[in-house]
Image 1 (cartoon, rainbow, N blue to C red):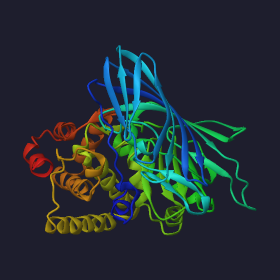
Image 2 (image 1 turned 90 degrees about the horizontal axis):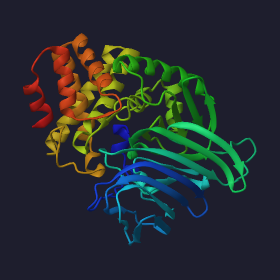
Image 3 (image 1 turned 180 degrees about the vertical axis):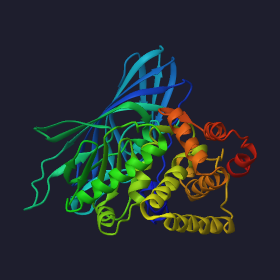
Length: 428
């Protein structure tokens, strides 16, 4: 998610719903979700199975306002559906399956496009499925979306779905066109998003582009490939999902990372091609390493996602346009940081009081995080700095990390004790 989207008014990303676990220590392992959007009524009909390992006891999922649970069943236990929660009491430990049927209404993390042009979701998967969005837990997903038949106007694209992970089977059924997506590597559930719109699709061996208009797809492929090469070299490891999708959707500029893909707007595609505006594209692509391949252990270290993506997009701008362009980006971040301090909004990068996504989604992880990485670069020099970035990323791939993991990697690369530097910028 880019800083400019975060700061925009009326943002989709200001929505929060808590998932909680009661007496039992629960860990979801696999979600299987089937969705059918109703464009006229602006709601989703859902059929979900959660497979999870748990000891005997109580497990509770919070459901959002606007949800209506039609049925909820689990073997060897009891399910209670309250106004804002689904509670499960299990008589035995082991592997269990919770099966639900429900409808989810507009809002609360779902954006419906005007004129029945489709919808998108972002960050808050609990808007459309029962899930645990705690960063400390990861799961796999099979998502099937049945898009109702809607004849396109002359020359228009038909409706398509785009989702996380690997693009699976597609077929025409009695209830619409079906699209399946598989996220087979465990990720945090806030990285599960999807969209439905009238889209064309172009695919090469590494990237896919979904867009309303494909006149700029060649430029987008070329610039994405160039940014990918830069980021892959910096990371020293492949990103988790080897095929990467960019979906350019109706509506105003937006940016949202997800597992194996990014959601942006058609205007962003035009800016990428015509204005060579590569920052949003590079920011979202960077998240495939710093956010997906490496996941944060808690919201307290959200800067390891957003600070890295912000800095890496600026570093790519340096490669793409030269050092003066990078210096300009850093100068703008310093000015934003100055204003945040004047407004009394400065916080440590590692902030224990960020207990949930809503609290973490502020400018500090982006702005202060990117500036700290620039400071490390200046302190250590390019060779050691980029060696440390590679050690940190490759050494922690497919793991959950915190700020101490990053500190250890930079100390190993530099052969220096960096406690004072990290304590000053990250912890105090």
